Image (cartoon, rainbow over all chains, first blue to last red):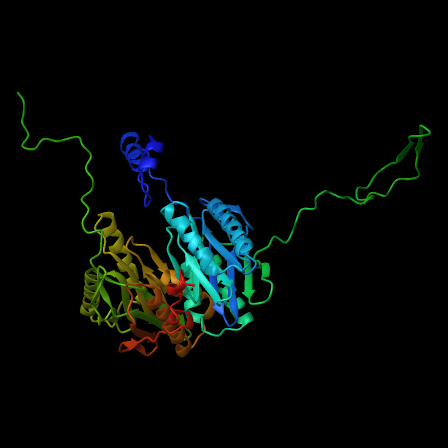
Length: 275
Length: 242
């Protein structure tokens, strides 16, 4: 039945699943799948000569921290990175997929990737799934046209910005960005501002935490990726694995020596004094 | 012989009668900070009717006594009722004619009790109240919410300012600031809130309470910048053309 419907459709939107969905919701009582928003703070901002992306490193499953140091900055192309908020699985798969598509396009055209290419591809992909693919992305890149910072919402909206933040900690980060962003920031100022915005998310949003990752993209240079550029409340004491005890750690009363080759047992001289 | 009752009991459990649980004419964020010599509190001057910016020059900071001030976000009619109730306390205290008047904490405590009682009847005064005062050489700043939760704090934010301004205050405010420095932080907070809260207004009113009493200033305009390069070059139009 599906094939018949498919062959009959003449392009445009495909409504073959509408009947099935109605049946599932009404007759079987299936619930609409909810959107799982994982806690995150990601920011991007443009500065004089490039773009900075920054992210926290906490991945949550409900109210449990699933990963204390996950990587939310993904490589799309040598000149384009993206920061992702939303469902971790969707982000990983979609960004890998896009990176592969961009690579193919680079091989086909012989040209460097552009930010608007990946924005188009992502929007087309995400719109098809009407927001059910939980990817909220901030894409930053430098290409032949200039430096760009774009944001993509899970339902396929794109917008270009001078600065932006997404995720559950986005409002905290946006407060800092709105207060302190200016045109013409220098490299280190932009990095410091991005870090401060992520810190706002880490300390004032419960869904974000752990460390800060930053990547800076500029024309003609390799991306400056600083993993865990800031970390807070690190554990100071780490258990020594494997346990190593020096000889003499434990006081002893007597010492017997058994020579395996000669099969001889000797008693050694006097014991250590037990204090 | 069967006694017939005029009204039959039915065994169905009834929901408690809920009165108004959603606000109509609302005020937006309030930000209040303690500083070295007193407390500074600010609100915008807008009351929204849903998503319409209906009343643009509303005094949302009210003086209750010579050393206390109240502001609130939420339903404005409930705010007017609260101001009336606290005024009644003042009147009662005056009638004793002994020069004793309630302290800022007394007002806040009374308000917390009133809010809690109303909440128990599912008929709340839909407000996040902020009470600021200066008594006995000490600054006072308290927050009473619609459930009756009572919190004393050094900085208070309500509404969207909770999300946008907590980081700014944590990073740039200190308890030993002078009035000028605290005012700068307050105005910065309102700039940010106006940029990102769709129900905010760029006209704000500030009030300072210190040992000299209460000073509610005239409303001022908050300046905001919209001319960033990347906004001006309309980058969104380039998507499919380049």
